Length: 458
Ligand SMILES: [Zn+2]
Image 1 (tube, rainbow, N blue to C red):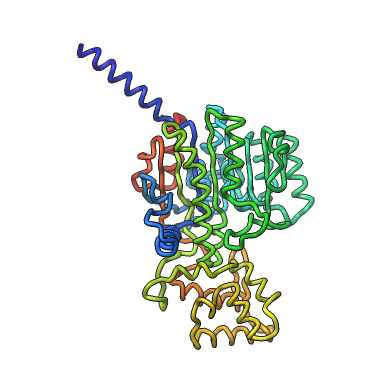
Image 2: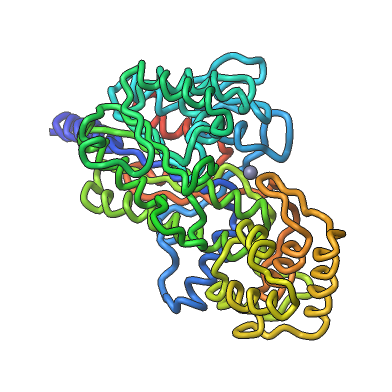
């Protein structure tokens, strides 16, 4: 009797361990999404949208942290952090899918495809061959080696790769060679969201959807660009494709790269809107999880913090006013161009633009000191004597820099840098095996844990 009991126990333990293997793995990476960014979106969700429930990722049963330092710096870049999250190995900044001594290291997504035949989908709102997505399929000593990175991508066998563009987009000839390489390897290359026929035709798809020619991203949510692709849309297309070519098992990585772009520019309103948009992409996976709860794992994390964003800022309001974000109808990046093109010839005309695009005066009171500060910089811009605020993705004119500094302060959002920080990032998880992520994670442990859960490692 006792022996039978133990046999049954052993069998149920085995059954459990089999049941505990996720057949569907989703990893969501908010590029640059620190806890301050998430909390800003959550504060907007609670105080402006009036939702009693937290935003979706914060409702997951596991909420933890990950440390992000790279092999050569306390402050990582997206290449080293992407390599850590995709492969489970620390490397030096700028390196893609390689150890510090340039030995190729494999990603979990690649291993799941090679060893277990998983379908693989990689989706991002920035260039698909940018550091974070590239770490899943490429092994190169520098993130800027786009042609080599794409040669690896074309041979990856991944079923669906989607993003805004190739990073080599400014060199037409090189971009052409890159897309040909994918075609040679059996990919259907689609520009835009693709017709049903195009999507149906290809087993392997490379999709690019820049919001305008040569754009490095699919467009900011806050700019509501007509006809532009959105991250939730790309996520749905990827999921649909994987369900067609590999319905039994797949791995999917979705990167919200625009969070990083907005945070590099210290554009608080754009960051919040990008995170809410990211939420909708996560919702696509969460709805899938609800249909396959015993087979699905979803992990949401970030590669690093960008900007050191905080709710609350020196010389800001005692109670942050996130409602101001509702009046912001344009990203800082776009405003920098628009204020030159459409700012008119007088301060009055510029004031109406500030009112229309950012809600100044019409919805957000502006005091004399603030107006004087903007007017003084406006004068220098007109005299072509204004400076430039240089950041990674955009050089802002000084007037835009002053305007958005005032806006962030009035809203109560702070930033410590235009670059990355060494702050830890959040980890949220739900589904099969999610408990594995509940302790403080080093970023390399996230793929290592996925290896164990899927049976790639003991
Ligand atoms: Zn960045």
